[in-house]
Image (cartoon, rainbow, N blue to C red):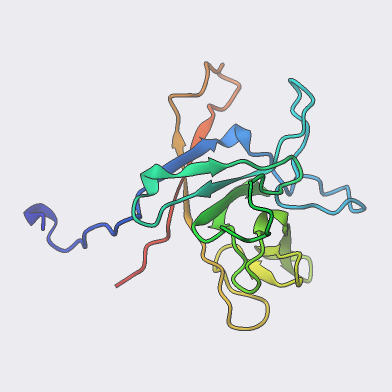
Length: 197
């Protein structure tokens, strides 16, 4: 125990922050308000202007529970489906985190649906509204249509709860030179949400 910080509990294993990429590498999934005919999916990205290749709208990371700094990115296809050697859907989703941007806010949640063990990278983000006032944001699992609040993890039915991770934006040394009119790019950092007590 540190004598200078006697009232602070030691950090739990696997609770370290780790970088997931620059903020500019995540397209805003809620920015197509006028396109009501095309359904949005969490990881269906847009085309990259440089090479016109589809870019996934999110990133998925395999995060070992004992050491978050050993996280590795899981490759996704342009339509948000995990590219792996395993053919069974949901085979190895246990320690994966899904990171994406919806309406300018970054979210990180478990990649595995707590109800059906389905990859949420194929889910649809949406606004939780009441009489036109946006109260929160949610993510719908496409397997059974269950939805989860992206801030609390609460399900729309049953007592299932999606694990929500903490997200921080930090100034980046990796960002290129910017002029006075352009905002400097920030780096997105993620960690498991800390339990109180």
